[in-house]
Image (cartoon, rainbow, N blue to C red; front, side, top):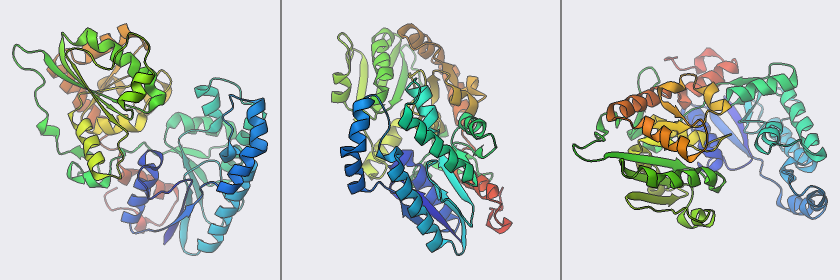
Length: 410
């Protein structure tokens, strides 16, 4: 029995879409499924022609638009045709088809078709861009809804996203199966799963006491994010000088290098301060062993994960840091609260994205070594069952596949 697995990028590259296609594919193959991958990347020549014609006109009329060739009808037509050809070629013996997108599916299918995504294009425009969609964007939204309506089901990585899709479609098509920890399989020597399938860390007992008698408390902070999260990093850098007399501070920044940060900082805010050690690690690829080890070491030593963007944060990186026993300071955006209903056990909420609120939150989290350890233990517990093993258990059950394909432990 095999699975047809489609993706807009190479699913065997762990750097694709927050590691999710790679890790899902790896878990399916570990179960014994034969997986046929389908490349849905944009047609380069068609993309160029579109950008020089219809795309050029659209940019003139709507310079702030997010509409692109990927969202266009020509790409939708080409991609749907690819999926239908793949289904015809590989359907014999196939359990189901997976597409790592909610924008494309076959118009007719003889096997279940599951679409996997985080949120819809409509939600992105309305919530993240905070505006109404233009005419071209509305056509894409309508097309996406038709695609989701004809799919067997839609798997979302966030519960509120599933609720929104079901409301938009007027029928229950979307389900939330959990948000797994996106750790590389090579870190199994650092993280293992116990007999119940729960995630445990081999470093649980190795965390050093954070205080030395007569010395400021050692506090390792972690910030993860690409340049679009610069606003949050800027806020964190601004408050560090106000904390350096109370703590021995260390900050690791993953996803941005020093030059990118300096270029986006306002006058008066520095990337370094007396008494504060800041390491800019840049983008770290998990496909590279040395960079992956540097990433793991940064997560391993972190005491507090800082997220400071009001509407969204680096969710996958935060969940992975939690699995290394790292407490969280973050705004309480909708999906975070929905995924982690017990967030007060391991989170210090950032009630406002301001310097005063950030200082208060960090000081509350690190009010004592015992309090910080309690938060860290709770963070690890909150994601202990967020494994790809359990995610695929639920995916197989959702597909109503024979019980012989289910693991004995569940």
